[in-house]
Image (cartoon, rainbow, N blue to C red; front, side, top):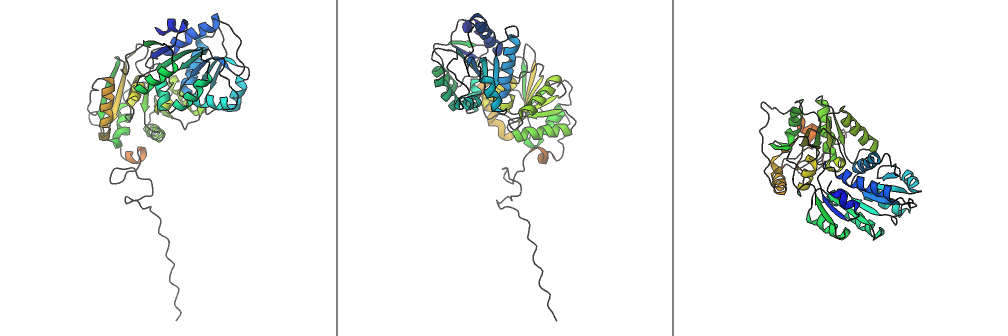
Length: 394
């Protein structure tokens, strides 16, 4: 809450805060106060406050927070992101709004169609700036920024502060106040972290075994790929464990259904990619499983920040295949601690056929091999039937 008085005073702010630290409330409450204390007409096809978020899930969460905190003020709130009909969003923006929450890509689409004007923006909030950089939104941001008024307030929020983010903040902010809710790139002390060395082909069986413990009440499982998320969810379902997957290939209604089921406790396990998981704000997540270690160490901080929220404790368990050791070392350098290793559960026996059901086929050299291709690289083609020799008349 250190940010609230600074935002109320209209100062630019650079906030370093991990997920689960109340940062949405820290900017939403003072901005709602601004709307209440300084009433003004809504700009045509525009907004007074623009909040940029990297994913549609996070955009939806932010809009929901504004609606909840401002239920007596009843501000105009419009949320725009990809995956939804753009014509409906164009109609929503015709009369303008107080608060526009958007993903950078869809906002640019609307600007290019002359459906949105940024000339009336009083406050810009960039949430999860480091994730925007990871997702390649830097070019979109550089196109959006010149369209904003120079006389504006900017709130820049990030969970980590790599050099590229510091450089971005220097360009977008004017004499900012720096507020750090948690030390840069550290992990919450209430999270019990551990790593289990395990062969890649045995990870799904290990996950299934650990989920047999009823203390694992509500868990998030992170995979690197969309395909992997689907495979893990199917494997768990076949083992009798209620699981759902969310990733960029899922439609918005599919993602919303999965999140509702997870929040309601109808689904114990949510398997997600890093991109899809941004914006998931769910209390009571007891465990976070890193099924695959992330290539970007900062993602580890984001992932495990989904547990141990609001003063609760949580567990973060990472599965590490032999070729992932360098990834673990990079994570440990970032968080400035060694993650304790744990042995596999006593009597753990991997289920058969796991390699085929969860992981891609590999050739003899350990490389992924597309179906139908031999180890030497030549495609397998069914042999053509040879014509029978013509009968010889006698």
